[in-house]
Length: 187
Image 1 (tube, rainbow, N blue to C red):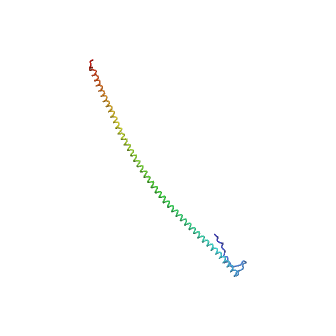
Image 2: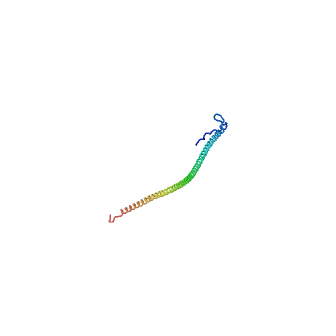
Image 3: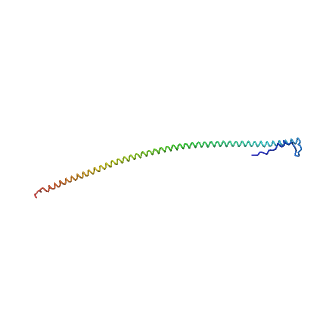
């Protein structure tokens, strides 16, 4: 980056009448040489400035191309980031839907299992109740049979006693009858 060379004052020669260093007027040849030197100086300055403008224009185009490339790269990066974000959002929503479906499915499974457990508990309660009723009926039947057996045992005991009493009476009668009979052979 070259800085612009300092401007040479060309207006000083135009405003003043051409004069030499000692103040005397210049001859036409000297004045012509002076104007040729000024012209050559201005041409060199113009060439320097033209070269500088060319370099600056080239540098400007280079910087514009770089800015354009950076903008293009930024746009590409922005689009890539947007695409990635869109894909991630889509994947996230898909996973979220899968999780909601899975949660719903598991909730249904839990509810089904709770319903089955409730039904099983109800069935168990009914079975226990039926068993308790059967046991109560059987206990009552057993109590009735025990009572009947006791009655029968008492009745049998009474009949046995009666039979024994009758047998004893017959034995006594027979024994008395034998005692009263004369013994054969005469007593």
